[in-house]
Length: 390
Image (tube, rainbow, N blue to C red; front, side, top):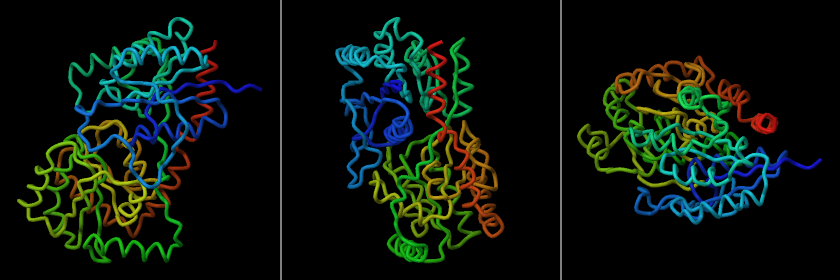
């Protein structure tokens, strides 16, 4: 029996970051059942608009790299026409756009518009975000334009599903979630050897073996609330004198803002900060060395950082914003606290610290992983194709 065809328009390796990783996982899940073609970008963000050092994965170990056709230029109408022509040549049963930012509004609208009537009911937009985290009126307008030709949507959180309902009209909204990103766990050590390795990592960080380690990981932006976590540290240190904080990730804004907080609050002995993008092969040492991964976000839909933490069976502390809390079983796989409150973060960490001896967080996370909706994504796509054909 001939496989159904799916074309995915989205960023994949050699691009770095969560979107690329998601597309890689999606391809892995779908390829066994479908004939999948990924139309990748030749230009994602113009360098002038990209706040980081590079858009490409410079790691020694590549994750979820797969064969793609690099054809889409986010700012070139000529490439949009070329991409739509290529999709028509492939004649897929479903065209999938990965949507996460209104910057891609005209690119995605144009390609989907140029596909014409033949694909009118075969255009699925996977909406990782509805609008950007720092969204305003212009972003909302661009989002409506970008999603205008979608015949259906796939939401990855309840929050986005509710937001989409405001513009979907009769268009169907399907539901899944991000995969658990266990691909970063590259260790082949036995338990005893791994414990020794963790102690070695802690020593490298300047920490003691018995230090209680918090981890803030990923791109640094205002909406992620690192400043709130730093302001929670003085009280935490009073309650847990051996608490340490690892801040690891590339800052997309003035990093001196955070350095100044550390200096003003005299936290330098308790906070280690690494302002850089971390290569795939290094990620494990930070997660394996931590007791609790903290996501003190001001706004969110879902978070790949949370799913990386779950991949290492590490509990999380999250603020009750957007769709974050729906992926955490409070006091079982992590702790949920109110947003924009250093004291709430402090109390949440103390609560977790007190529960460690009585709650098996790792076991609970393992059980939650087994129910992850992404595991059934191939069956969901089969349903979507059958319903678009009817």
